[in-house]
Length: 97
Length: 392
Ligand code: SF4
Ligand code: SF4
Image 1 (cartoon, chains in turn purple, green):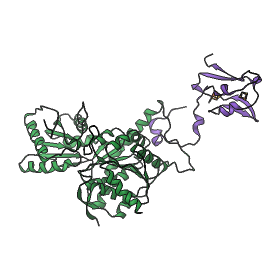
Image 2 (image 1 turned 135 degrees about the vertical axis):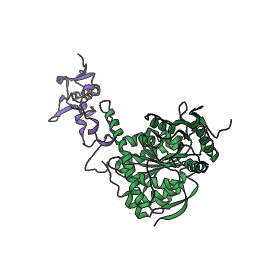
Image 3 (image 1 turned 90 degrees about the horizontal axis):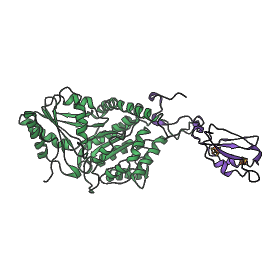
């Protein structure tokens, strides 16, 4: 994205376009990446409920893949995930690996 | 037809606010401003204005409420002094940075410690770098006139910046002076209907105020703010010209008194200029070419114009009613900066006077002018910055 020069800015840094947080990708902040292990998932959707960045997609009422453009790796989903028989359906993996 | 009355400076500014009828005022009492907002709150209680008066628990909240009301899309005013202005400090920068045209009379008073309620300019000088426009007023008439003009300057679509109007606490704020009020209809027509810019209450077009701006854009926003500030001088003159048409009173960046052929001059803000002018007249009667420059627009400071008005002088004394400890007085710094661009320049000295309400007397102006005569003759300065009217 081309950054604006000083002549192109709105007075007082007011944001005039509603809902433009979508343009601001927070995925690059991530140090740990959540990985979904589908066979341990019980479809409780806790992860979807808890995620502060709406980075967990739901399709036809079912847990779908992560939207890594917005997941900033906070780990809340992994903490809340009950998993199946003591096996977590979400694990956090270091980004560099 | 103008109405001629005898009123205090506070009363005069409250009257200007009544005539302008802002949408919102959020204020907190502080000496010596209290009388101003107290009088205005009577107008609110008596139904003389439609203003929503918000009584808050501190000046920090007063300015915060003003910022909210202004961003919402209202015409907004408040008033303060001294510690009150100091408590607003954080919010002052936000009002200017968000480009909100809030109007604030500041009835100048010293800052603690030691605790003092009387006049000096330390309070407004502390707001110097906040991005607010500053207009200074010698007397009640100028404070009234500046308040009315401030709305037009602040709300101009090329500007949209907040304005502080200074007048000396007690000396002007509380003393009764002759004043000519404009008719209500004249003031109403002059300030015109308020036009909001990007108001939050325009709910069909949602918008956000106060986003986080990181290093990739912050520098650009400040550059844009600098640019806007450079437009202020033009608008100040345009508004003054229009104001002269309805009032017959002339305003510019500064008042140049007997300066054209002067050899020595005093540069001084606000009420003490009046005393100095009397003494200058006496020196003129003695055949000494003395003059005075009294800045009106202090932020943005009109450097080129001030330099041009002072360049022919031989010696200048800048009198500051506030000190920058470990530095020169703030007005001296501005005048020196203006002059240093000249090829050859007058000798310049700095006196600190009148702190915490210490009287500025004719003899102080005499003492300064005598010293300037000596400097003009010998071209020698012994002390650059010195306190006057002080006991040893
Ligand atoms: S790590 Fe945090 S941001 Fe990423 S999907 Fe899980 S809860 Fe959402
Ligand atoms: S919280 Fe765990 S178990 Fe529940 S839907 Fe999400 S991944 Fe599946």
